[in-house]
Length: 335
Image 1: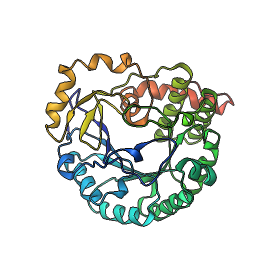
Image 2: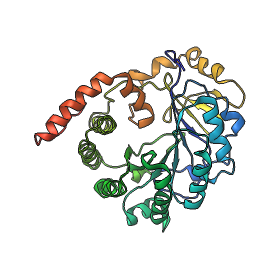
Image 3: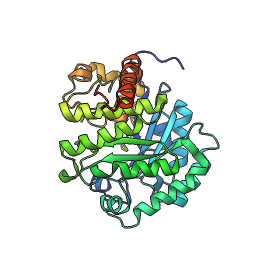
Image 4: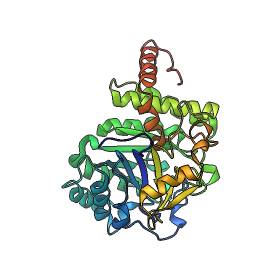
């Protein structure tokens, strides 16, 4: 569909905060039992092009399939289902069911390191082997629409190369994130946030890893990783944020937020239409505090993607220089 300026195109939808793990990188398992219903999800705006369906652990929901179908019917968006991978049989069943009528479904399985590190972060012996079992079940079904997701934390900053080798072994894309703190979403244990130099070493390794492949997708991932290095080093995003304009976050109570990090809510999708809620951001004068004026200056895929897409030429110029620098034996520049 034609999208107007100010229509959101990207969203993270947390169907529930319920989880079967108690990871050191978040505290969602301690939250309430609320979960979004298919009826509420049908109120999502048709302008959305990308939706990350997450939790908690969404595979714990009995009505996950109707919920994802409701999102797709309302938006036609490219949907990524994020999971910790500890329910291999259930995940395969859900994916087989959804693939019948949800085109372009993608699944992201979190891998936080090799076995000992992953199980430590997840605080669950056997979690790593279950995650790999999920990957092996889904790989024949999804191919390149399955990817591994690595979040850098203090416990695993030295293990990016090991997880990258795993991604190469399975011939799967590898996405990258950095542990963030947020009052209403992430809230990791303080010791989970990596030190500056550890984070920079990991994201620089990731940038070089992505630049080994010559493709638009790899170039985009490399730009994101390099942008993460810029944020870690300087505290400033390389591109303005479009949260509250092109992106929003929906929590399991139906509350619409500007993003995963900001604490301001715009209203409940349980009690109002999305159009009414989205208009409130202007009436509450929140937009002047987003973008370059935002005090948080985070850099996550969910809010960076639209910024990169809106600055394609700048990102392409960076990629050309980065490939040249790498091939000549130098370090890729930071955006």
